[in-house]
Image 1: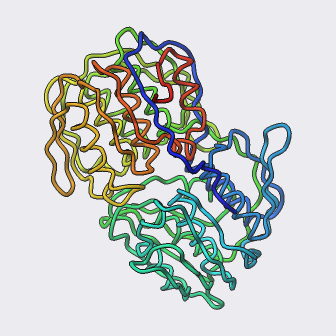
Image 2: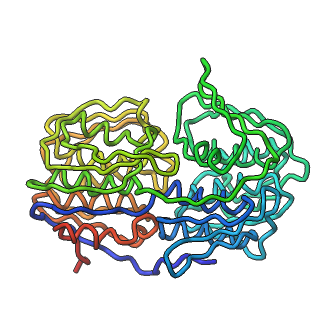
Image 3: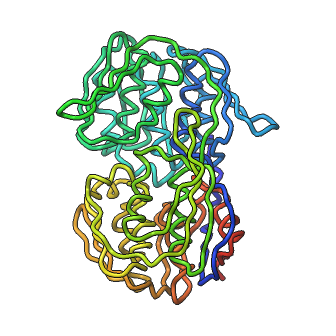
Length: 447
């Protein structure tokens, strides 16, 4: 299994646009798409998935589930169908599992495989191979899983699943939905009760979706945080799922409309899980004209349409407690902050140091290249507003969110903004350029 990202860089430029207008739909939620494929793979029966994000990261997860014995295929009707093999039914793959650029894909899959007696090697692209896996291998080893990793607990990694797994209780040292999910998934094929204690709440898609699949899972709020307990060795039942739009993908057209004069757009069918709406809350606090219309429930998740109009934003302090609900959105928030009046300070950003790139450093470098003044520490960033000059080239470090964020900046900058490589946008938002240009943006290949 190999990634389909082309070898040559694909630079793009973004230049000042007129007003953005239209009703759009962004791709299906990435977090839910990964989980739908994985949980379908270990359920009994056929799970159907509509609205799956058909981006490289998720396609790599589908290929991995097929290699592990669960057939995940896309029908001519656009619906994905997963033939599940049961909680204990995964088998050793014949080839290494290639997760491309996806930390979510590889870390959740490690949990899925950890308590089944199989052997699998996990690999990824150059960016994923730099990311630390110790935060997952440490708790999974407590079940009895064995790992051989590259230096620094990095990929490539070979996993030997525990033959006689033992349940664990694990307190998260950092707020991470990926680590929490990996431990809970390992608990599915472990006798007894496995508990994760999270001092700071994180995305709860795993808990919600596992409950929908019939898992015996309970969440109890205690003084030291949420205690999430899963009872192992109960079969899951196949489901019919409809994946709503990804709020992390919606962030880009949303900020683009806020900073581009005259803009008025509607982003339809967005998931509004309260653990994912930190950016919306922050932008509204900054003065953003964002209203939620047509609220409804779908697949256990609240969804709605975002109506966004151009607004004059003001600088605020974004508290560290909000970071887990918007950790992927800080790059594009930093772009919004550069067009606000005053200073925006963002705290609790240490997790950005170990994303697809050192996102905090990459964001700051991109802002500097386009005439924006910043200050930063290990876990905080201050951005001076007043508008971005533009005219700079942004080094994306193979990071899709850095690329999209600075392409948004160029729509309102005095001069065009260039990103050095846009190939990796396909990992989460394959038609980003087409969708943005369809609303009136000006994104085009660099000369």
